[in-house]
Image (cartoon, rainbow over all chains, first blue to last red; front, side, top):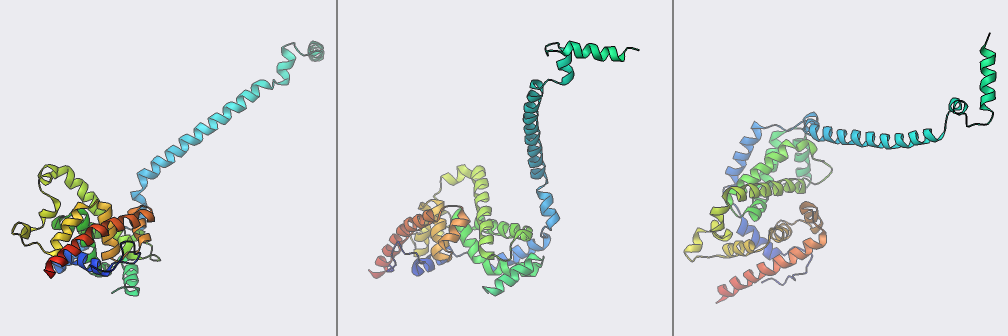
Length: 115
Length: 184
């Protein structure tokens, strides 16, 4: 057993060597030949193919962003609409008769229009 | 072939040079297969996973950043390939494997009573949780830094230290027992 402490932050050379030997796999050259043969049947993806691989994820993400943006706009739009209902237009104020002097103003306007 | 050579090969492979990638396979096959075996505990499966890892790395070579080390990037892919294969195998063959202990699958000599240090270490590894196995193999056998292992396995560095500690404790026990037997 090596003098290496269990707490050592450096690799244990003796244990490491024993593990490499225990886990060693036979037929390395045959593995390399087989892997290289498979390799030549494949080709690396180019950048556009990599991007194409992300197409559906991108589409889903864009849809979610659009939905969220739409929801946000609608929410803010609702606030604007409620603001608009509190500010009555000038024409509305004239016509609803609640504003003092509105009837006089209306009468003068209609009189001015009469030939 | 390490250091600059590996970086040069990786850069050439990144431009689609299959020969350069073949040289990288030759350079890293032993380690990739050992790490795959650590996860799968079966030689044929380990070879399948290592090969699939190399092919996945080749397909995705455009994503490799040449400014970073190639080895951890490759090993991450090999670990993922081995874990994927283990999941598929578990689903497909759970019944047949349940009746056989992992350590005995690749040990024909075990039945003959001819158990050497390697077999005992493999048997001891098989009793450890996968994360501990990987941590101690990557650290002590393959020379990865604890920070690299943490990034590779996506766990905190403190967890790696703890896993290495517990893994070593179990494996050193085997080492010392075998040595005592040899001394007798």
